[in-house]
Image (cartoon, rainbow, N blue to C red; front, side):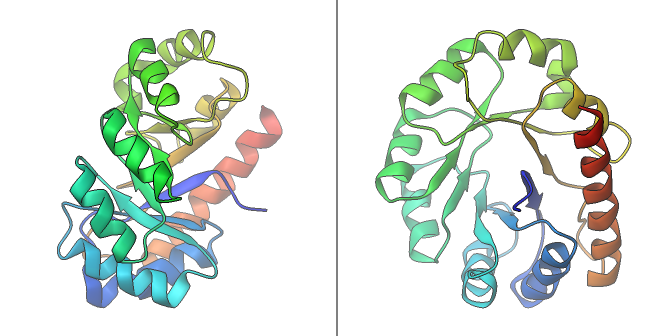
Length: 203
């Protein structure tokens, strides 16, 4: 079963991308995001997609423009994650057959994203909105809307977010920081996966 967790590899380099990706997948996280403000992100995406595309959904984060969507698609990416909600980016992402996860905070942004065809919604920054804010937003969203928390989610609080009704999470610095070894990343990823499983049982 695919876990609703996105491994955010901000700062990863092409030469280490596959080894880090393998470590994250081995821990059970099979969605990999390389933010476009990482070194040579499209090359990292290309290598990850070529090596691990049969086992993972690979794509990019911090996607702001339609042109960037085209570059990600050409590199083999099939996931587009943004910190904001731009309908043109969402629409082009979906036209190309990729998953679209725009960043939203308000109900207005959420409904604009859904109207444009978003696969799901990225509540960002989740730590700023808080669990009570998430619950208020969730109460007005259409049934079945996928809402992921991103920003400040870690082992210590993922259970509370899951119990409060979040569908998934994006895991950034708690999963990977530049310079960390695959072994270290696998350990961190395993701890996050274990925390998510515990949260599911408590939800």
